[in-house]
Length: 119
Image 1 (cartoon, rainbow, N blue to C red):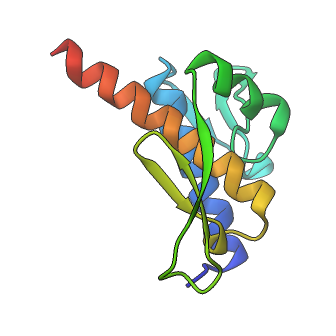
Image 2: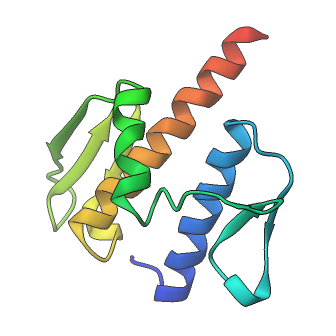
């Protein structure tokens, strides 16, 4: 079941915040006047789930291998598979948005795994 537009927007911002924190940004704020834009001091952070210019470099940076997977139990039948990350395309407004979301989610998984292996 897909979320409302507002819920989807907030989930994108939440993923971006999580990725920013894992990448070493710790003083992150979202101001009322610029809803959806995350800031660290005077620097706007990338909108990884919403902008290909921000999202695209994550593929190379984390060596993400992207593939599509048929899902017989999903009426829409397709998912994006990146490492251990699986994102159902039908859960997103467009396939393009699902791909960016999957890339960010996979980058988060990569960073969390690397962080866990250090301990």
